[in-house]
Each structure stands twice: as structure tokens, then as C-alpha cells.
Amino acid sequence: MSTIEISGLHKSFGNLEVLRGIDLAVEPGEVVCVIGPSGSGKSTLLRCVNLLEEPTSGSIRVAGTEVTDPDCDIDAVRRGIGMVFQQFNLFGHLTVRENVTIAQRRVLKRSRAEAGRIADKNLERVGLAEKAGAYPAQLSGGQQQRVAIARALAMDPQLMLFDEPTSALDPELVGEVLAVMRGLAAEGMTMLVVTHEMAFAREVASRVVFMDGGVVVEQGPPEEVFGAPREERTRVFLHRVLEPTRVSEDEIGARPAE
Amino acid sequence: MKLSPRRRRLIARVAGYVVFAAVILAVAGAADWDRLSEAFFRLDIAGDMFPEAITVALRNTVTYTLLAFVFGLTLGLILALMRLSSILPYRWFATAYIELFRGLPSLLVLFMVGYGVPLAFPDREIPGGVYGSVAVGLGLTAAAYMAETIRAGIQAVPKGQLEAARTLGMSHSRAMISIILPQAFRIVIPPLTNEIILLTKDTSLVYVLGVTSTTIELTKFAGDTLNTRVNPTPLVVAGLLYLVITLPLSQLVRGLERRAGRER
Image: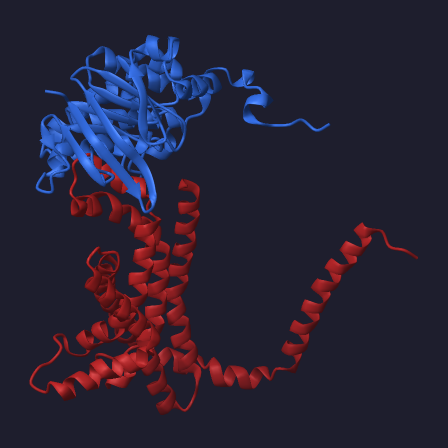
């Protein structure tokens, strides 16, 4: 059974059709990286998986449960899906440790001691055991994002969603977050990652999905998508992202003054 | 001779101080200090007001304030949540309530609760006697203001906080209680403290309910003493006692705002 099974997914915001028929499956243990230009619908796709956005039509199954079914207990499904946001979204009024324990205690009803033990284990996992007593505002962006990952992991998810997890970080902090994500992938976590980090996608992804204009343009193993893209749109995108200094004025239609 | 810009600035600055000092001196010189102190600073009259000024009047002022604040805060929180509810009639009701009670004078509402309701329902009474009437009468108005403050506080919590909480499997209400409201309250503590200050002053309206010697508050107490002693010194005493409550509160607000500014 696929961990995620998306078929015929459409999503509109008012008159704007952001997703225009997406079919995508993610198998257990797979790391799928979604790449594509801004506005291509990558984040919306990710947010539909745990129903942060309500699909306009189509169906999404997560581990066999149809989340688009009106009778689905979405809170129960979300417990099994960890999510990491671009803006970290740590709870500012709670310490790092409380950030990692609160949902365990309130949602999974774990005892204080057990939740604390699991929190410590996961904070250690992301290398932040010594920051357990700090407040989010006292941490760097990279540290905050690692806490956010620990917070999600503490719920024992069977699937992790990453929504541009390094896009809000200073360049020198990107590496520490990617390191944790690479470790998770190596441990066999099923991951769906929306990212602009092409190097990460190339190295870690089992499959790369290129989206543009609300559809999946092409997908395949990273060496194929990056090495020999079949579609022109993919080639243009990769050229602009991977070789930004080689983009010529000609191809963007700029005309130097006479 | 042309002045340098630096000299011009200096002269303008000195002139500012000189004008201020001159006005102060002129007013002080024109004032009749004997009559002023005879009218407003009679220590014997002031002394006679104690200890009742504190043990009864100040205490009641504080009690009325706190009762009205607790009632208003509870109702205000409910209204704020209704205002943000996805259920349209709740939003309508909350909006109508807030518009209504922000538009009415506190005194009118207090009259309505103190006299209107008892006249309409002679066989029922508001529990707590005058204390209950004050809590409701001032709290109803305060709730309208606090509802708007709390709503703004809730909306000031970034949307991602709710998403993160929901993503962890929390229900909407659980996320509200554990994640959103604690942060919203941190944001609204300074404006809510201001609301306490306003309420403290509004308790001076309570006299219209016909308070007795045990339920009397500062303003009425001062007014009564003024009548018996035919001297306005009690007003000064009452004024100072109000400041004993309100100045530390506004100091607190300033401190909290500074702290909030640092945490951001």
C-alpha cells in the first residue's frame, strides 16, 4: 500500500486554479523531492496531503485512509504525518522541550515522563539536547527548524512533509537542517519534500518530481531529471536554478540600451 | 551678523527653557497659596478620613474594579471567540453586542442594570447585591472593549501557529486553548491592564446605585465628606488614592510593553 496516493487532485483559490490534475504516489521509505518555480503549486500540493488546504476535487489517500472523505477523522490522520514549515512555526510561549512534548501529552496522552523521555531522545537526534530549556526566540533559524523536526518526529509519524524547510534560513544555516533530513532519509523515513535545494534533491531523493503551472511536468530518479530532463520546461528551470550566472539577457528578452 | 546654524539651535533651545520657567513662575506668583492650601490641603480634614478612606472606600473601589474586570474579561473572551467563529449568527451577535455596548455610556448601562432590570423583574435579583450589580453593570461595557482587544490579540498570533498545532493532530479547540490563547494573552496584557485602569475610574459611577456606608467607594466617600465638612480637601485625598491604584498599573503596562518589545 502506498503511503500517499493522490489522484486527479485539483485545487482552486477563487478563480485561480493552482493544481490542475495531479496524480502522484509515494511508496513507504521513498524520499520524493518536489521542485519547480514559485507559484507552480508545490506547496499547495504538500498542504493538501494533510488537508491544510481543502482540495477542490480529486482524492488523496494516506496509508490507505481517504483524507478527502468528509467522514475522515483528520486529526487522527495528521498524528501520523509530521510536517515541517518554511517559517518553523515553533510555539513561542513554550520552551524547546515543551514544544516537543505538548502534542505528545495533549494528543497522544503520553505521561509527562514518557513524553519528556521521547522529547529528549528526539532533541538529541537533531543535536539540540542542550537547548531543551531555551525559548524559540533564543535560537538561530537553523536550530529552530531542527527543533521543529524533533517536534514532528516525537509523534512517531510514518510520513514527513517538508515545505521548503530551508528557504527562510541564512545560507550558512541550511547545511545543519539538510544534515538532519539526510539522516532521516537514511533511516528509511518516508518523506515528501518541497525544496529549492537542488543539491539535496539530487543526492538524497529517490525520486524527483518537477511541477510547473499546477501539473507534474515530469518525474523520475534524480540522475534522470537532473542529468537528462525530457521536457523543455524542466530544462529551462534547471538551467536558471543551477546556472543562474549563465542566464543570458537574450533568453529573458532584455534589450541592453543602445 | 549672521548666526551659525549651531548657535541658532542653541539659542532656540535656551529660549524654550526660559519661556517654560517664566510661565511657571508667573502662575505660581499669581496664585493665592493661602486660600489654596486652606481649600485643598487641610490636613485635619484629610486625617479624619482615615482609616475609612482605605479600609472601606479604597477597598471597595478595588473590589468593584476586580469584579467588573473578571466579569468583563470572561464575557469579552467569549465574545472574541464568537466574533472569530465560523458560525455566522455567532459573529453577528458578537459584532452587534460590541457595537451596542461601545456606543452606550457606562452610566446608562449601570442605571439599566441597577434600576431597569430590578423594575422589570421585581421577583429576581442580581446575586451579590450592589457588588453583583456593579460587576454586571460595568462589566457589560468593559466586555465590549476587551472582546475587541482579545480578538486583535488572537489575530496577532501568526497563522502558522494554528497550522503547526493542527498538523500535530490537535483539534481546533485544543490548539486554541494550548497554543493560540496563551500567546494572544501575552500580547493583550498591556491593553487589558489599561482596561483595568479605565474600570478603576469608572467605579466612581457606582454612587448612582445608592451605596451604603459599607459599600461606599472613593468618589462618593470624598463627596460625602466634602458635604459634611464644606471643604474640598477630601477630593484631593480621593484623587491621590486613585493614583495609588492607577500609577503602579500604568507603570506595569509600560514595563510589560518594554519586555514584549525585547522578546520580539
